Length: 457
Image 1 (spheres, rainbow, N blue to C red):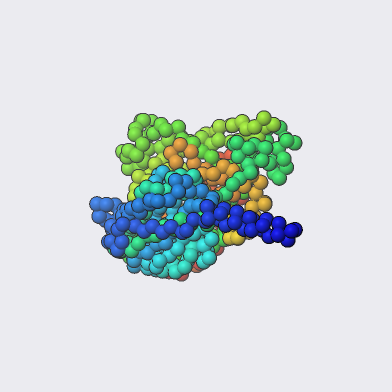
Image 2: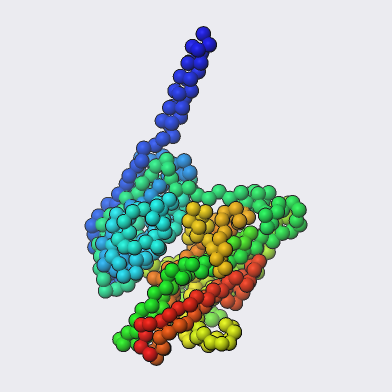
């Protein structure tokens, strides 16, 4: 009798398990674009280089989240200079994620490249064309699995951002499954201040603890992404291109917000207008500092410079002024602070947002001293989540990573005629005017040795 009852209980457990499994184990659903093998629009044409392809989704559950959602994106593009290409995926709710932005240097094609959050072959920025296999995208695919209804029109936007070379859009395939890209869930949030810490110490022991950001550069990225372009008689200069990546290792987010008053000098104009000097109008921005108290959060607001809306194709988002400075230094026996500047880069203005996160499996967050930061080293990891470069608010979460590849605009120093070949040092400094309040202002600069050998001296 006992054995019989045990058998009945076991059978009921198996039936119940299979029932639950059948309810939650959705088959993988695959959707492809409605425009396959079409010519891409070259930048010189009236389309400004934008090709857009619709992916019509229907028949899925009306919510995608951490249990069922977008898993991966498969992309095929034929283009002999793939570094001209930026690819953005937009969901029905209007959220955009960068799939890949101007990688591959002198190579060609995306050959059925798969983008997913596991990325067996690593980051797409480290890949080599034609990018065969699985890669981590530039952006965060899990942002899509935010509870939105996936049914509707998804758009793949392909920007050809340099003229002279054309290509063909092959296809895009979206995979939805019960193994979706998973988002970060932070213990610290505006809704759960008790989950926040002050330097690994519970906030209850502190009164009015400022959760300050701490921006630092990832030296390893710049060291890997340096590309010297030979001197050109036609252009009259050579070029040094390089990647830059920053992450926030503080205990609070960097958050800035504009006032939506757009100025050309002292004249108020519309956002996106062009000033008389050919620049875009600026709006003043303000940094929000979160202060943890025993009763929750208070806020402190300070001025933090200006930003602009850049309407150029491939940008179409907000940039913060004076965010980074580039200099090429001539070494000497003097202190580094007194080294002569051979030439400078323009002050690149970046859109500040979480393009990715520090991840233990990637070992991707090392500061200027090559110290590795893992998730457990970052109190309040994931607070507060900036998924887009919005007009209202932008910023960098705790553990958030911002990245600008060597192919992006502004990621270069022009090398004038007469600059001698030899040893130089590339100096990169974020927030050179100390516009943002941080917990540490001493880790915002890296100096990387560079040997030039392709210039006309």
